Image 1 (cartoon, rainbow, N blue to C red):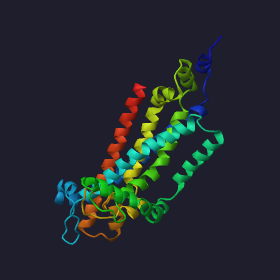
Image 2: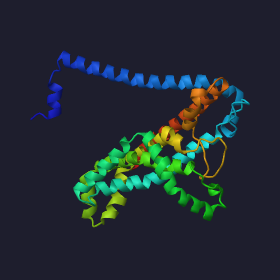
Image 3: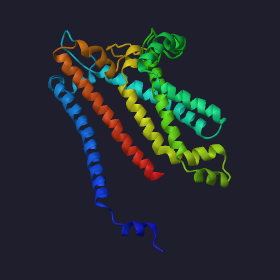
Image 4: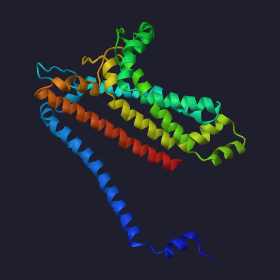
Length: 315
């Protein structure tokens, strides 16, 4: 008897079917090329707009924090520091919460109805506009956490990271609002990755006598780690580029301070605040800052692709 693949080889494909396949292939290549061209065009436009500041300030733009349009002096170190610190600290807090929530939902630790409600709440959290989260952060979250930040300053104020008295908006509230914003991304992608783990792996782990947490830590998480890491890197890119909520709560101060309790700035917040009123060399400096943000985001995506590939080969 002929196998299915032999029957497929013997069957003659009609010309219309071949033309549909070739047309779809051409269309897919064209659409993918359009996406790449748009990304390349954006990069070129931002780079061209930043050339003036690149020639005038050079690398000192990245390591100085003086932003004075009146004196025509610009440095983006405060915004770069704020972007990296807020994103990385938010990721440090959100990853255990997001992955833990995904495990809690997918591993049958609670009744199905409660799992459905928690999953729905996570999806609704992702649907809240960032400006609404920013307002919530200003009027609810920041007053609520201020006593805790004051206690942190009182006990650990001798450390540079907590040396400033919290007076309102600052880097720490911006970190927490970013946690709220990226938590649904990490949870949703981790949940999907865990659901894709074959049931045979779970059954084999339980079959050799392991416990539930032994199966989760030694079998299920390693099998889903590439998808989870991809979601984490996607959340990091979102955190680095988030604008409105961070602008409303970070303080928008270009005075550099190592303290997490002091007002700070991010590149996205600086662009949102100043681009509408910028003129002359300030526009070019803002373009330079935007180019730095694009390079940082591109580096995160490249690192994510490399890491996901390595983990996929390992597990």
